Length: 434
Image (cartoon, rainbow, N blue to C red; front, top):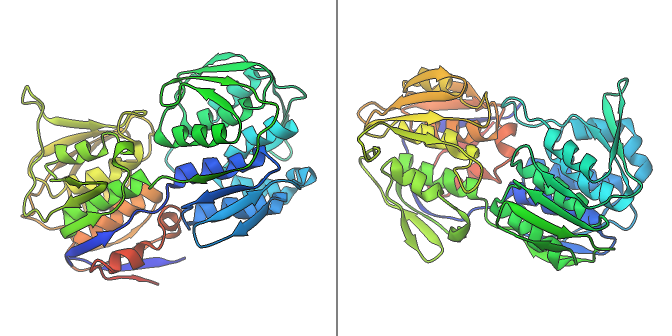
């Protein structure tokens, strides 16, 4: 098991560029299964989850050409449908949550998919009901194999329909869109997720010959096409990494520039950090976070305590709540964090409490942070990364702490952040991979 050894208290300065968006990459790579023509995707992040998905596509028979570290071409002209029934395929899917995004394209093009319960972060239940209900509406049937604990999903003829999603699930919406683009007739999806990565998927599919209207809204209309063709697509910068770097700059920075952030696709992320008192300067498509000896948490207009909560887009992404919480530990003032969308994502705060943070964990969804106003620095410690986002939050905490910290299970961090220690060390950090 790899670990990070972090020497805390080192000020960071310089320029850093965010990687391509992980969540978009998982969607658009799977979308290459919808055609037998070449699909070129640029700015793919070189991270564990994405690399495992690319290898899984290779195993399925997709031809993968690597042009550079972050640019690939995929051609699904020789898909091995027999491999989908193998124990090896089921085992790999169970270890990779992104594999669930293969279901929609496989159903749409080949009429069949095998589904194992996917792996991923240990952040509470992440049900697949939205995906399955959408597929059923389109005409898919499900057979459960209790011995292998897998679902065999099949459909001889997918037909468009109207559906109201039970929740605005991002992966559910993406999966249903990919299943519907080749269905007969028109599909209307209401309460669709509308994150920038869903918008990017829709634009890519339209460039392949799909007919999707309502992009950017929660009401999508899809006129089924008979087939799709190849295309070239570029992935957006990762908004979660941009937010993580803003948090690092606030806690440990001596002036950090974040390059090419695609500001129009960040939503309210910059404003969420401003609510904690963080100064953010926008310069073109860059963000500059100056050094701040102190930053003060805002309050609501009536003077009540600030509450920061996650919500479906265009609300605040839940993936950044752990970073914002760490940043608040050194702010002036108090703030309530309300994690509404997952029930186990706040359990990492006990590690911050061990480091000296003043946090009251009210229940699995709410935590109150009483900021130190930098009068009391966090203590170094040994900790384990439970998931990707808590892992990066703990790394930020360790970089700001006095002394040397150790973070175990950093494979969780590697799942979402490309060469993170090398890029941060270039800014002045001292992080050693052991």
